[in-house]
Structure formats: C-alpha cells, structure tokens
Image 1 (cartoon, one colour):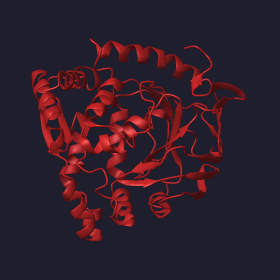
Image 2: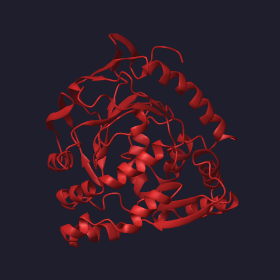
Image 3: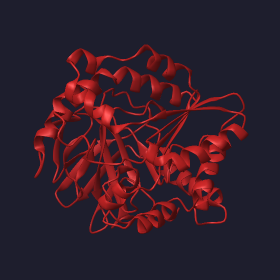
Length: 368
C-alpha cells in the first residue's frame, strides 16, 4: 500500500475528525476506495471509535433514478433519519468507478429526489454547525478521476497527495499553519459590509455584513484551502460568468452565466446542458439563491480537474454555490441543492471590499 494512504487515514482520524472513544463514525465510499476504507477503519478502532462502512454503489443509484416511481424517489428510509440524528462523525470518500454514470438520467428525477432530501441536508448541517457532528470528504485516486483531469493514474496520485501535503513529513503542521493564516484572512473579511467581484463577463455585488467567514483548513474537506461565508440572501446584484464547466452529479454544464436581482437568479445561459441547469435551479424555492460565497486559497491546486473537491480550492479563484447555506455562517437559505461553480480571477480579476480592491489577479493585495 502507498504509505501516503496510511498517512491520509491518520490525518482523517486524528486531525480532521478528531475521533474520540465511543463515537459512531460512518464511512461512505465505493469499493474502489477499499484501501483507504480499511486504513481508516483500523485507525478509527485504535482511537476507540465505532466505525461502520456504507458502500456507495453507483449501479444502485442509477437503477433508482431509471426505474423508481416518484414515490420511491421521494422516500427517505427511517434509518437514514435516525442516522443523521445519531452519528457522531462521517467520512465521505470520493472514488467513482465512472464519474459520468448519471449523465443520461432525467434531470427532473434527480431534482425530485434531491429536493425531497432537503430536510436531511438541513438537519445534517444544523448538527454540524452546533458541533454535534464532525464530517470530512476526501479523495482516493482512481482511473476515472485521473481521466477527467487528463492525467495518468500515477500523475493523479501525485496531484491528490501533493494538494494535501501528504508528501510532507508532518502534513498536519502544514494545515495548522494554513489555519493560522486563514484566520487572519477571515478576520479581515468579517470587517467588510459588501464585496464586488469583477472579471471577464462578471460584475457581481453581494452584502456580507455580520456574516461569519469559515476557515477551511482540512477539517471538512481534505485537501482543503478556502474561506467562505453566506451572503445576505436578497443582496446579490449583477452577473457572473463561470470560467470552468459546472460539474454536478455526472453532468457538465459549460459556459454558465447567471444574472442576479435581489439575491435571486433571474436569468441564465449556458453553452452546454442548459436544460440540466434549469432543472436544478428550479428544484425548490432556495435553489436560485446564493448559499455560499468563497475564495480558493490552495496554490498547490492550479489546474481544473472536473472534481469540485479540488476545483473550488484552486488558488486564485472564487466560487459561488447556489442553494443550501451553511448555518454556521449565519446563512438562512435552505435547499436540496448545493452546487459550487468556479470563477477564475488569476488574469485581471478583482475583489473589491467596501469600495477598495483587496484581491487582484488571484492574490490578496494585503499580506496575511
């Protein structure tokens, strides 16, 4: 086994999730990720936790969407409701055998299933915000993700482990340093009332006064590297052109442009798969509002890979998620959707806070 897998498992148990004796921890991931599942399982046992594995089988999800009735799509098993209330920690491992497995599924059926699970998402986020539940999502390198990123598997492994600083003797020391630096960035951002994004095809303003900025330092995502908040729900004005395709649940929507008025998407366009975009933003009342406004800070991630775990962290970019807000930021929007879309600011982009430029060409002007 690659020793970096063991190191990743150790970081997940002892840093990201900080597992304690007696805690129930769910491991969700495809059989492709079994080397990491087993490494994490062993270390979780050594920490005194109670790990259990939930296999994520792509074929079963496809069967539900293609053959399930509307009632079956909307059905939430009681065990899932209980689980959201009772589990202490969750590790999600991304390792799809085929990242396009839902590409031919009717998007209206996906929207129906997702909107029906809004209550589960809301409860999960409420418990996480209250400190009752820890969670982290990470990546196990597989061929499908490497192909999406236009890399060989060995190149992709180096990319994934490099982004998490797992080649370092002490990766946790790196992420603690990131945490300290981003804490200063968050303090500065919390002093602002309004932020304007200016870039090619983009002139968008949001209000953030009184909202909390979250310091993403490897606790909920790994690798990590971003700071985010939820803007005031009715504040977004203007338009944004996304630099990269917006990838979500096996669908790729290219050339997305959104126009906002009083916080809501009032017009939209796309060069590819506009029908899927339309179905997703119409899934419920909160899907056209902004749930997250973020800045990517991981400069070890520079290339678009069609994997949002990495793409939203690209140093020099910002992203906005439509839909569900994280309540710990003060955001109030609720939705079955949380779709991150990335805008590149590395060539001429600016972030302007209360009338003054504080971020230019992909970097903060101020030294933190």
